[in-house]
Length: 379
Image 1 (cartoon, rainbow, N blue to C red):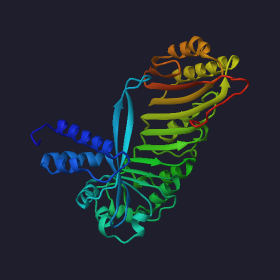
Image 2: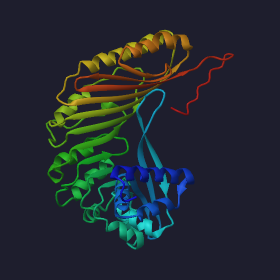
Image 3: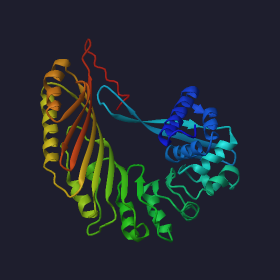
Image 4: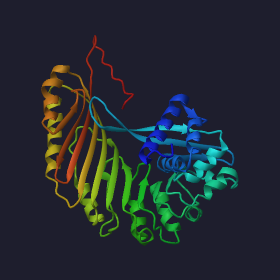
C-alpha cells in the first residue's frame, strides 16, 4: 500500500471513511479499517493525518471522552445542477484511546465553549491544549472570557468563528499581533458595527486578516461608521437568511463595502428568499418584472472587485403547469445557462467580474374542493 501514489492513498482513505459511515449509520464508535490503514506504514499514516487536518473537527472533550465530526466535500450530480457540492458529515465517538489521542494531536479544527477551560486539564483535555498547531476555532458561547489562555495555547489560529461581541473582546484581550489570523466568521445574526469598530480600533493586532464572513437578516442593515477604513480586508462573504419577498434589490451595500474596505477584491452574497405571495395570474407578471429589474441592476454594477451572488428562492404558485411552462420557465431560460426542470432549476449568469447563480424551487399548489393547503416545513 505504501508504494501507491499519494492521491490514490488519499482516495482509499476517504472511501474507507465513507464505508465506516455506511456501516454505523449514526455515531461511529470504531474505525477498524482506518486503524489498519494508519498502521500500514509511514505514507498511509501521513495521508490520513492530512485528512484529519482537513476534515475532522473536535466538537466536545472531557478528560475521558472525545466527540468529533468528519465532514468532507463531495461532488454530486443532481437533475437541476450537474456539479453540485455537498458536505457529508458523520459523528465519531471512538472507543479506541489510541485513535482518540492521535486525532486530537492531528486535528486543526476545534468547536468549543467554556468547557474547554472549565474542567481540569487531564486526559484528552490536556492533549488538546497541547496542540499548538490548531488553526481553526469555533466558539459557541456569546460571552467567552478565556481569550488570553486561547492565544497562549493555540498561537497559530488562522480562522476564528465567533459572535460580533466576542470578536471585539478577542481583539481587546490580544496583547500581541495575531499574525496567523486570516479569516473571521461572525456567527449568529446581528449588525456588524460592533465587530467593525473593534477591528478599526485594533487593526494593528491582526495585520494579515483578509476575509470576513457573517450573516445578516437584511442587506439594508449593512452599515459602518463614516470615515473609518480597514485596508487589510480583501474578501467579504455575507449570508442573508431572511429576504423580503417580491421587493427590488438595493445594491447600495456594495458602495458601503467599497468605502470601508478600499483593498477589497471580492464580495459574495448568499441570499435565501421565500416568496409566499401564492403567485398566480397577474402576480406572476409583477414577480418576473421584479426579477428582470434585479438582473438589469446587477448587469449595470461596476466596481473594482468581483461580485458573486447566489440567490436561492422558494416560490409558491396557485396556477397549474401551463403558467409555469409558458411564462416562468422561458423567462429564466433567457437569463443565462439553465440547468434542471421547470419546477427546480439553476440559472448561471456571468458578466466580466461578476456572476449570479439563481436557484429556483417552485411549488405548485391548487385549490381542492375549496380548501387550500400549504406545507410550511421548508419555510
